[in-house]
Image 1 (tube, rainbow, N blue to C red):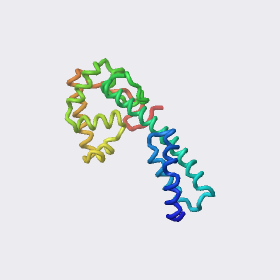
Image 2 (cartoon, rainbow, N blue to C red):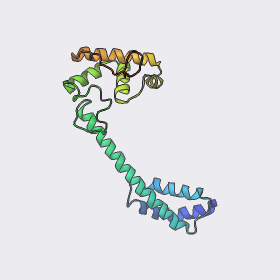
Image 3 (spheres, rainbow, N blue to C red):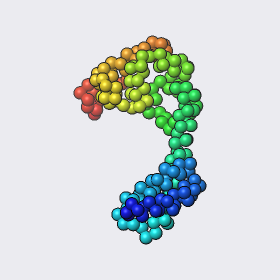
Image 4 (cartoon, one colour):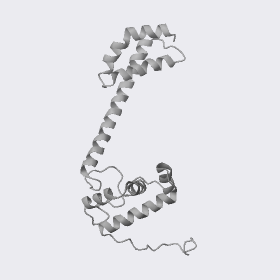
Length: 188
């Protein structure tokens, strides 16, 4: 599409397209702009550019509204989680079980004591513990993210856990019996 034709379409339809998009979203200007950009990128000019624009704006506005609702739900859950505290089970974030670390359900801990103990750790130790236990990152990945080596990340993790155990009065878990022998092979 040549620039003059595109300019005429903008002059003639931009206001009505914004009004049309407002039926679905508060981001009408962005949706209309994206529709015009998409039209300009088309290899072949649609048979009826105005109808094409209305269809593109309708689809874009509906998608923007869905995305806004999803973002709003996510932000509300995140805010509720922050208000509830780090260790309370009041808000289900969809990640039950795996990697929950020091959750109030796995140990007999007061959630506010556990939260206070974690917050009292030095930032580098707290960062590694949260990234490993709740984020599921390996020590190598944590090292890359934090600009340290994997061994430093592991050392910070171990030191942080030791401090948490001490402050919370939790003993180190005993060794677990494995079905593998020292050679790494399963018996039998």
